[in-house]
Length: 474
Ligand SMILES: Cc1cc2nc3c(=O)[nH]c(=O)nc-3n(C[C@H](O)[C@H](O)[C@H](O)COP(=O)(O)OP(=O)(O)OC[C@H]3O[C@@H](n4cnc5c(N)ncnc54)[C@H](O)[C@@H]3O)c2cc1C
Image 1 (cartoon, protein in one colour):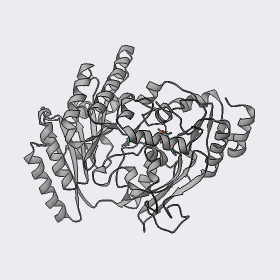
Image 2 (cartoon, helix red, strand yellow; image 1 turned 30 degrees about the horizontal axis):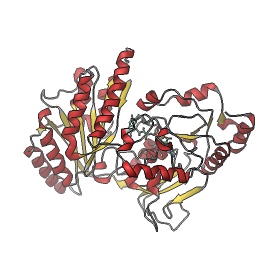
Image 3 (tube, helix red, strand yellow; image 1 turned 120 degrees about the horizontal axis):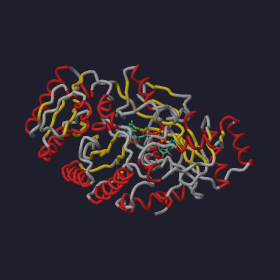
Image 4 (cartoon, rainbow, N blue to C red; image 1 turned 180 degrees about the horizontal axis):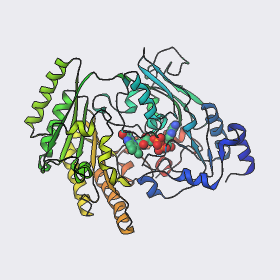
């Protein structure tokens, strides 16, 4: 509990307007989006703080250690694994005031941004200069770049360049004991003037990527950027449900050609658009892939397009022509419009699986979803997956507008649990870990997970930094 003495110590660090114990504020910060929060339940912090810089973050963390109070960093509270929930009360730290500095270094092709900067805003600033992140999360304006590191966000275009974690070249972090440490020389203008993730010794940046804030609070990020592609074509292909194996062959063929992006969805993503008469999918199309091909010139692009078309034709693809542009064109957000009617209530899970397992994994997804009677337009069981070189990162999702039936809500949770357990048993691993997931999700990681927890204990002896069942011990 927070007493007057602790409150005044926090106010001395942060200023009066940046510490709140008001019930209304605590309720507002307990409202986090998604399945994780639903499963963990409604948890209130004891206090909300809004630091403005790394020094203030550090002072608050040192104080929290003295009082043994949990600290939960929060960005826009949109992640659905449940690690943004104040599981054990304590301090919720809203990172949104750390958004003062963002610089684009065009010589070194790196953007350096305070952790609270919105990813969307950074993307827009890059866009004005003809630049972009190598990958492209499907973001709304809220989510922040610090939490994008903490969640290792993925998105379109990760086929060639990987996820957020693969593109980080420097970090500034407030450790669980309060020290501020910069990782990667020069990334934060404190070192040798160059950006290099790998310095003498092991790669420590990785400790904070996908750690959901449990290893420390990210306060500044340096990420690689790229020029926008000048010559690009988005191809769009469909496959019948019974041709999942041929689709997998096509994925391998196209990834070997190093396509810029291979993005796969199922027909339910188009359901709303079809009902509204905006799009007509051929009846037998079940899978839809958007393939982004690029080249240094029009001639090079056309040659590459020819090769990709051949791979598609050899593997029973149905050409869907401009559908890709309609739904995944320049703004890259339009696909969401087509499912928007169903977006009011979402249960989703996120994981990695080997590309070669795609048909088996998809069968499991369909079987479990049918078992609960959710394989219909009413529940819009949308699948989408971003593809890396040899893995895919799928998001099976159930979306429904305004479910009111408590039985149905309960069934959606059972669906979620069963799907997670079966997918892990089939060789998938969760890409974000959080208390919402069944134990099997950690157990599949074996000794790696045991080591992660030992490192956590070592870095955070008082176990205050985003403490949870996940990192604290099953
Ligand atoms: C419409 C929509 C589209 C999405 N699209 C994608 C997508 O394309 N790709 C994708 O990967 N994900 C996507 N997501 C999910 C995504 O993982 C989260 O939205 C995002 O990463 C979380 O950012 P946030 O600012 O909301 O962080 P929060 O949800 O507030 O926090 C997420 C986690 O990060 C921790 N954290 C927050 N800030 C920090 C910090 N500074 N340092 C350390 N830890 C911190 C929190 O404690 C928590 O564990 C999407 C979500 C939505 C709603």
